[in-house]
Amino acid sequence: MATHPETNTTLFAYLQKILYDPQNASLEIDALPSSQHDLAKGLKLLLQFVLENKDLCEDISSGKISTARVPNRTNPFVGPLKNVHHTLQHLIWLMDEVAAGDYQQRLQVMGEVSVSFNNMVNCLVDLSLHDRLTGLFNSDGFSSKAKELLSNAKPTEHYFMIIININDFRHYNAVYDSSRGDELLISVAKYLRNCCHEGEICARLHVDNFACLAKGKDLEDITARFILNNHGKWPYPPNHAMLFRHGIYAIQDVTIPVRQLIEYAAYTANSIKNNGSLSYAVFTPALAKQYKLENNVMKTFSKAIASCAFKTYYQPKVDPATGKIISCEALVRWLPPQGSLIMPSQFINLFETTGLITALDFYVVNQVCTMLRKRLDAHLPVTQIAVNFSRAHLHSRDFIANLLKTLNKHQIDPHYLQVEITETAFFEDITTTQKIVKELHESGITIAMDDFGSGYSSLNFLKNIPIDVIKIDELFFDNFAEEERTRLLISDILSIAHHLNLTAVAEGVETKEEVDFLIKGKCDLIQGYYFYKPLTEEQLNIALQNQATRSVIQ
Image: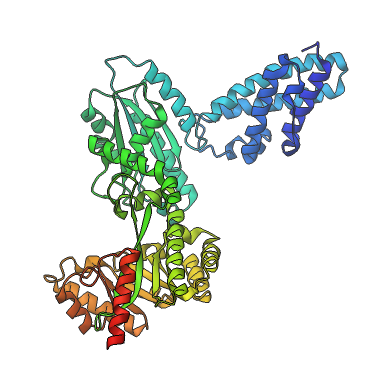
């Protein structure tokens, strides 16, 4: 260090900037001699930490360790924090010494700075591998340690990757507050730490997602230790029926990347997300097949969009009294270049989870607008088309702007388009829903509540949100002939719709008995196989042409 006084001064000035003015700290490593590169890279690491953890660093530098989201003094995160704090204090003192010293004295102090700084970097690296709230490994730390454990595993050792998720944690946070949520996460971390034996590790990967790498004789041993024998010890909040779900992957090949092992276990946990009767699932050959299928779906999505492999079908909504097509719903199917037709049930939920659904929805809108434009240009009759939109659009600031932009691009009047959103999506954020419905109406677009009666129907909601259409969920017609209570409910829904001046659409109608009942109840429109299955664009054109011909004859 003594041979490069100017360089040392540059590094020292950079360190001062990091500690006192990090936003404006910059350093060209290539301009330094190679002997200084390691120290310079360490300084870069410190700058990154300071910028990403501004509040924490302010607490550290001022000595406020207790406010740095460390829940108690026994938390393993306290030690590294204190070490960083002491090192920072030492660095600040050394800088004061340098400011008062001569050149040689500065060089000597810079040596002390280097040693002190290296200690701090080691502490920061340790901190970077742990979750700040719980003290467990974070994702990076868990992956690194798990890789080490698996690479040193004995042939007789059997490892299992376990993912633990808290059901409905977002709702718990909303009902109580974030501090109560933090307490719950800390309790879960403590529980998992107590479950782990020597040579096993646990982590908080993300929000309410935890992971364990555990050893056991077999699957029964693991489920007994982590799940079945410990239900009474789980940190359930008072008066809150919260459940935990576990995904377990038995590791047979220790060379598989840790991230992939986590993904297998997480996929397994998600497979029981909507099944309240199950607390754990194991990665089976059937799940492996489904996982492979979904991965292939994900990989081919962009190509499928570009090649128009997604096909838009149209299911007519019919006036039950006349059989006349009044409007249609656009439905999407996937036809790969080689393979059979893939139905929405095989990809919609996956696209919802990954966010790809928004791109698919607008792809369908473009297809619908293209079809409408062709009919308008040919002076053919046009019906209103309803398009299903994911709940993800409700949280997009650009949703309505992009929708209107698409309509304008094809020169389609907004009244030809109807937006369908599921009942449950409407209830996720009432304030946002009200705003979107208002803006859609102002744009001339009508709104339908899809799957009405399948979730959390509220008459108060219907009173306060001015939707235009309710679609009676097809589940009402599953046992229509045998269930008198079901028929009474449908009658009541139709009556409510009429009183509120809403259009009532019954979907999934397949029998004459159902049609006759709906006609008697004055249902406005019927959608189902009794009248029409979903039609291709060519088939819809023929159906509309036949309808127009019959009208002329009559």
